[in-house]
Length: 160
Image 1 (cartoon, one colour):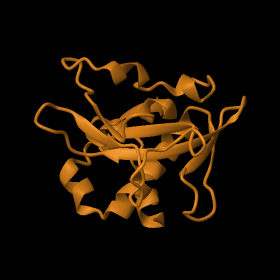
Image 2 (cartoon, rainbow, N blue to C red):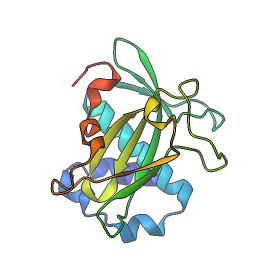
Image 3 (cartoon, rainbow, N blue to C red):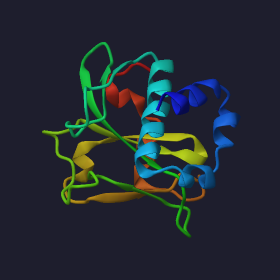
Image 4 (tube, rainbow, N blue to C red):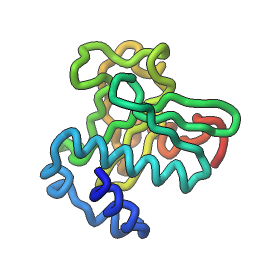
């Protein structure tokens, strides 16, 4: 991961990161895409002033812990790198070996990274009580009920 993390951190300008198209992302293994999404989250959250910690190992249902100054948040990071024919990006609300959605006992928020748009959604886990996935439509021409969660970093305790 160090090689990829260093590569990500070297790309400080937004346009350079957006230049990483879906073909490049697709060429990575699923595990590596997850690591890259976590590294991108670490960079974004740190730039916003949050403290970010990584739990030891892969045993927890959350990827990272965010310290907002007013509390700690268990964060699951997901990413999407290609859209469907309607411009929507599918986000799964479950792990690769699970058939049920994440619960409030496991995570506090699911943060979705839309790679080609360099866009983040901060989604409360309560959205996934009755669904295992959702589709995000980031284009302004496609209104979505989830747009209220676009760049909603305030849900992590109000830093930005």
